[in-house]
Length: 121
Image (cartoon, rainbow, N blue to C red; front, side, top):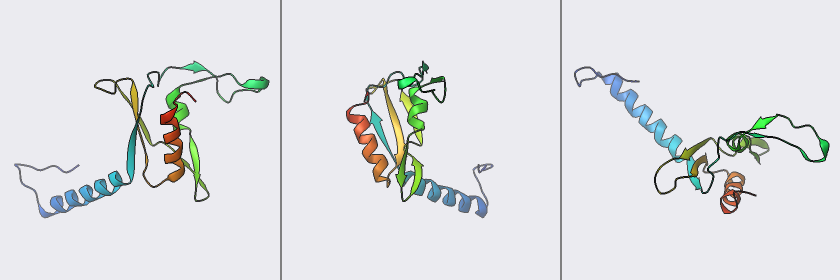
């Protein structure tokens, strides 16, 4: 954080502000967000039950946790699909979520587009 006293700064503060703005611009350009409709229970905790009598890896989970656990393969390594999920609580898209992901990750974009078409699947 850069503090300016009496609306004045030394030369180092201006250089640091330019550096941080450049970093923020580059970082923001590498992320994209999508609005996924009709997800009102993002943080509702439910009990996990597995089919065929297998043991669940955890007893309780939420939809938000499961979305954050999604990974895809990109260039031979596992990368997370979502970096941030924010529920929208007011406005036109109330009851939806805004999901942030990398803009250049094709497998993640394909998966998110499938989720947008049918969130319950």
